[in-house]
Length: 68
Image 1 (cartoon, helix red, strand yellow):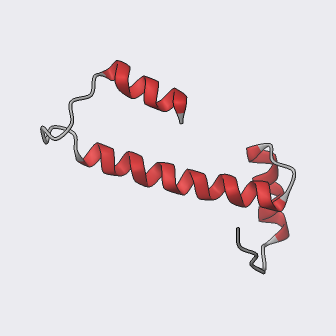
Image 2: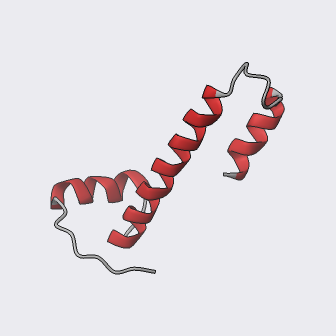
Image 3: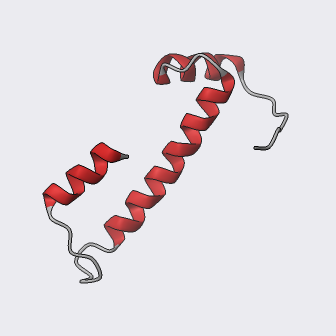
């Protein structure tokens, strides 16, 4: 776990707290980091569509979405 000091726009932070349902700065930042990673993983997965590298059914993808 690392500790970092950053300047965060207070209005943006308040909006992010409301949007995510998180009450702490740490919660909002962790949520945002998880979303960035999730988005990149989905982009990578979408890039493999039709490549024959992976064979996932729509049901497989839905299960992955629910477990993430």
